[in-house]
Amino acid sequence: MAIDTPFYDFSQYLKAKFPDFKVQKISVNAGFTCPNRDGSKGRGGCIYCNNASFTPGYCDQYSSITNQIEEGKWFFSRKYPEMRYLAYFQSYTNSYADVDIAISRYREALSIPDIEGLIIATRPDCMPDAILEYLQEVAKEKFIFIEYGAESCNNAVLERVNRCHTWQDTVATVERTHKYGLDCGLHIILGLPTEERDSMLHSATEISKLPIKSLKLHQLQIIRATHLAKEYKENRDIVHLFDVDEYLMLVSDFIERLRSDIALDRFVSQCPPEFLIAPRWGLKNYEFTAKLIKSMNERGVRQGDKF
Image 1 (cartoon, rainbow, N blue to C red):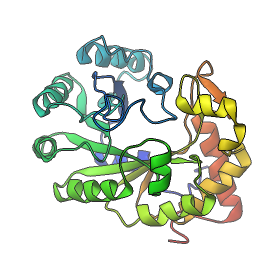
Image 2: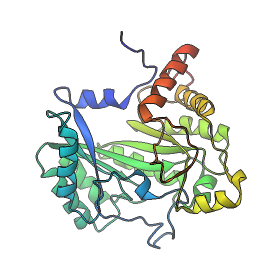
Image 3: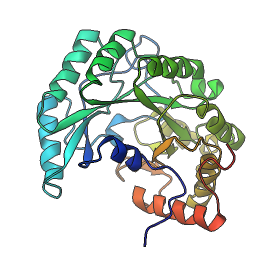
Image 4: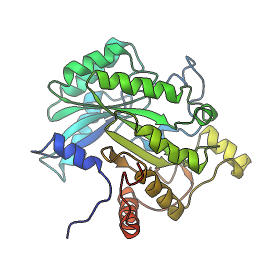
């Protein structure tokens, strides 16, 4: 029996783009950094970020892009030999470099057999027109998708976590990307320090005003070797960490307020146990998604009901 999914899933978006075969993301560490790490905007990075906690083992910045992708292909092809792939530039800010250098890294990935396109994760204050122009040309032949890390719509919260950009930066860059005819999505973290529930839910309204195709959500986690971990050790009241049921309700309420044609790519982040301090839910992504679908169906709510 088919499961009634009460939201638009990103897999449905990809299936519409690739009706004849399945695609799998292969994460790439292309050796980029971030402007709030190298001093151009700030130091130390976002207070919650330890890049190693969400980078697959085959993503070694000292290995070539080609080697990383080939290793990723080998990993997935053992189970899915007919699979094709999208090179996912995931680690750090993947448009923050000299334009020629960035483009050369994209071209290397695109030159590899069975790579059907690129997904580029970056910041909204680090996307020059020259890269958008290049990607606009590539998109005539290959799949191109850009993920912008917005993290919050609340400027005070963004300042608190050392993002070093504003919500207005996100709005302007999403609109500029749309003018180039490129699909893009946002990433939002729920539960950042000082952000209240009403502010988080209001983000759904603000996000829905933008010409985006997808959204990733995840819960705030306290990760080892971050500034937030140090703060949390000194004072556990600096953040409110959700339990599973509370977060389920928050995400459900968020989705109700979200425009119905925005594809939802993720709801939780899975940090390796050796990096994670809290919260320790013991749930995999698909397990949380199953709980969310069940909860929303039992409550009779769907994406866009309160949009």
